[in-house]
Every structure is written in structure tokens, then in C-alpha cells.
Length: 311
Image 1 (cartoon, rainbow, N blue to C red):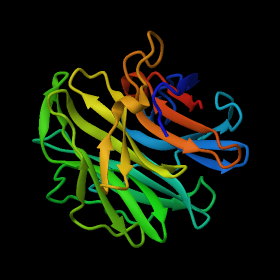
Image 2 (cartoon, rainbow, N blue to C red):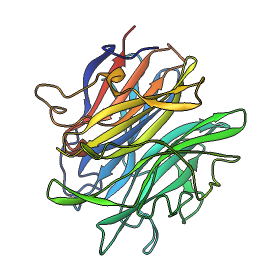
Image 3 (cartoon, helix red, strand yellow):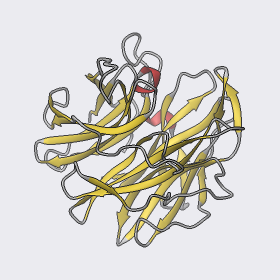
Image 4 (tube, rainbow, N blue to C red):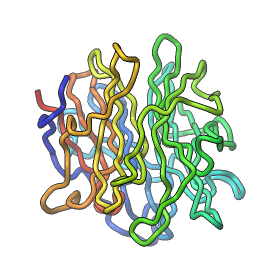
């Protein structure tokens, strides 16, 4: 399956009107979509307060017309963690999926640093109804390790034959980009027997290009028909972030970067003219359509977009 020149932008799904009195002041950051039922797509997103601290909320969309909003969360489904915890200064979605009739939401937690700006590690919460979530642990399930001393998060899961296959971003170095120190990280892979317990070391499968990138962010692992793909954000040194993808080669047992396969870039103007960020690709069981949700300019400050894969 080739993705080149086959994505059609449908448009702006939702842009948050800023309201300093509301818990959700701005941004639609890091979307992750699930098929809630046969006619509803739920997209979990990072929602910033007036201080720039993210909590997780959601928007429900019509499966036939994802520009049609059916409902919006009035309260966060996941708040920040307790003081001293890895997620005390913000949470945003990594990947939502349905496993054993429960919704599993992997998420990234933020904790501020001193000599580095912040730390990011991975958590997990679960829900029976998609609204009331409980953390499986107040400690990260994807914690600091030698492969990722400051960043080890943004994971997604593909469960096959009772094996939880996961990809995530990890790294330890920083580089000056856009006047600020920003983290560098690559994509790693490992497997888990329960989706909660992970080893201290995974396999490095996709490297960022330091000549033009400082990281490959929040990789999304999924299977489309018989092929496995990873979609990710290319965090570029010019701060105009792009989307990329890699495909699994069964013959070589390796992943190959095929960024041109997605062939998806900024619009000439509008909410995604400077950034296309945090892809979440979903193939609906109800109608087999393939949608990609993504954040626009300002890490989603300008809104949530959607595109469709056209055959």
C-alpha cells in the first residue's frame, strides 16, 4: 500500500476559543482517535489551561463526516498528577486503544527540570466507559532508562497474538532550536506480555537526522490491511514540523523510513500553514475509511485537523 499523494485534507475539525476562566483555555494537542461506536469517533486531545499546562479531554465526531462535532468534554478525563509525580506539570495523549472492552490510554507526563527544561515519561490509564479513567500507577510505566534519561514516552500499542508490541520516543540529549533547548530522541521498539511491564532497553528502529531534525515524536504503530506502519512527527530544526512514516519490511525484519510516502505537508495558509503535528491514523471498522487527525500551528493552538486516505 502506497500513501504517496493519496491524502486529502478535509479541513479544520475544531479550534478552541480561548477562555481564561475555563480549565480548557486553548490547544488541541496530540490527538489520538478511537472508534467509540459504529457512528462516532472519539478523539482524545491535550487541552491547555491559561498557564500552558495540559490535561486530557475529548471531542466526539460523526464517523461519516468528521467535521461534524457531536459532543465535547466538559471536564478533563485525566488531570495532572500529584506533586512530585512524573506528570505533575501536564499530561497529553500518547495512544488510545480498545483492549478487552476497556479503553487503554497511554499518555505522556511532564515534570519540570532545572538544568534541562523538562522530563517526559510514559503513563497508562484505563476506562470502562471512555470518560472515567483511572491510572494504573502514579509512577510511569515507561520510566527513565539509559536509552532515554530525559525523554521516554509517547508510546503506542499494537496487540497481536497476546503480545503487546509498542513503539515510543526516547533520548537524553538536547539542542538549541528556536531560541530554546529542545530534546533529541529516536523511535524504539519492544514487546510486553501485559502492556504495562516494559524492559529497560528496547530496540532502536528509526533514527532522526541531526542535520535537519531534533527528534521523531510520538510514534503511532498500526496495521493497515496486511502492512504495518509507524507514523510520527518530524521535529525539524526550522521549527516547521512535518509528518513522516516508516514501514515494516517482513523480509529484512526491519523498519524503513518512507517519509515521502505520506506526502503530507503544510497548507498555503490557515490553521496548518506552519505545522502539521502529532498524527493519529485510524481505519474504521464500520465503513473501512482511513482518517488521519493531526494538530496544527503552535502545537495545536490553531486547531485540530483531519485528512482522509483516498484510494
